[in-house]
Length: 156
Image (cartoon, rainbow, N blue to C red; front, side):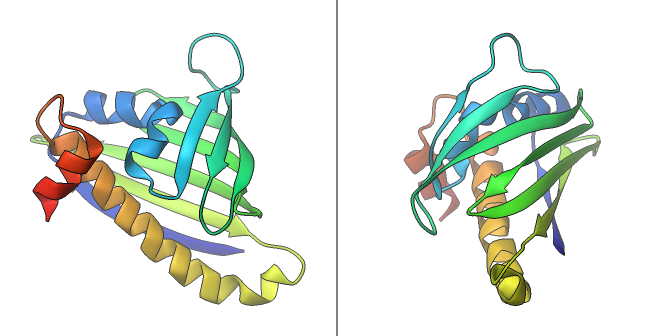
């Protein structure tokens, strides 16, 4: 098993960050490796809600994600097989008076030959996740109505 954690501070109220992050259909807006994420279970977002996700990197793949924890304005947990590796993602949100501290922990459970590469892959994936979280931060802090490209251009 390979675990890593990234923490960022977002200049937005905790309820806004939670609302955006818990809508997994928005993942392609801030994760460059994902082309599409669609809810496949009916009803409102809740524990047990499942999504079909189309990945483009490191290779094209279709993945299924499931919300396993949804504590409003506090915690989101998701399980799935991402890029062929079983993953458990935790997003912990903490109110910071003028913003939100987001701590993302990723646990990867590789098996077979991939297990031997897990330490190397873990470092690469941790860096990519950190970059995606920075894009999430930029997106959430951008003025309302700003496109992804415009938001990312504001950051650079």
